[in-house]
View (cartoon, helix red, strand yellow):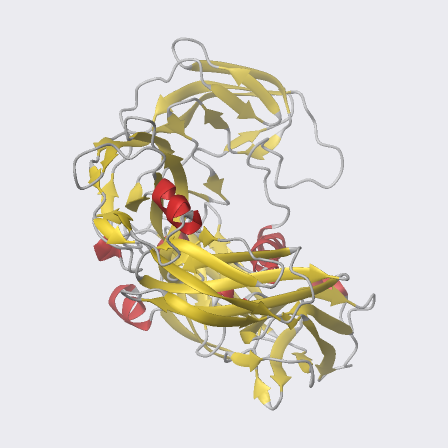
Length: 539
């Protein structure tokens, strides 16, 4: 699991940047205007057609959301909404059998929906709202003798880029029926791996009278075991139904056994064995823990895992993360020592100018773990924003990510003599502290993005400085963008059509696919740049 602070980082940082760069963002589900201080008129109207994003044919009886009003399309896909909030918005549609095209600010996930500008008292006609047909995977899971495997767990893992690195993330999970059949629907076009394993065998072997395990139906992945690369995936187009038979090989059902140490009682403890290289995979293994702290996780197949233990006792958090490599035999005698969550203090200091403390809203702070399973803490701020505490920390390697606004920028963040904003630093116990130093008179970048035909274009903007976490932004439909609070230094600026495919943490990928503009930002100055939007390869 990704730590709470990392989740906070992804959500709050994205919202903060969009608010700074674009103003209040549109509510994509209700079409809230992006430009709205003061009352918003609700006397606008809109009509249009819901269409199949692949064929262009009308989609009958879809539900359409326009400016806070939800209506139904007729048999010809036509809809009409009255009493709509005025201003710019992107209308959305839903219908069983289709994947909702959730747009991003200025861009969409693969399909562009027209942004409608509704002016008070007027009607906008002929809006086209696209819906993409779902992809479906159906199949049968059998054992080595050709018999159906009932209750097998089938996980669909999608190849995605998270924190600039490509890895696998669970998309959906299902169980087979008494005939060994499964059906997984509602899939968007993309690249996937499908894995099946026999849950029933694992449960029986884990609780049977044979404490050393036995043989049974193992695990099968198509087209092969997930290894984090696109080469181990298959392509599933939109609207396609894939029929996939999976035969589970006979395999030794392995066990991971050991003892939990560090707690007087383990009643509030969770223990999970997670395959490394995936995020939120549904095929995680877990097992009970006895009162003496002993555990036995059965049904494990060979591979590389992270054993994660979490517990609360007397309102205190205890955690442990232990890498486990499972080969051809059981893993015995593990000692998992829970340690108490600890806190790391931080102070914010301003250098230069009048050196006054900026308002708390003028910079965002997050902590990113180099290992998604390593855990993290939560940020507690002093009311004046001059100090903070990272609470409930677990031992691990972290990097501090912080972005300023206005004239403030982040100069450095020192922890035990190292700049934790520029490198991953181990934090294993309380002690020391983080000094976050803000500079004044930061620079800014104004720019415009064009497509391959030289026309202004919406795009995702990526600002890269060596050794620092990248910053992202978006350009509007006129291609205009602005990035404030930039620390003086040398940067490369990129424009992409789909940020979700950009492996910015992979130097080889960036060398092959990236072509940005190099710029130098001076203190208190605004740099101007023109970019050509590049298509991010999805394979």
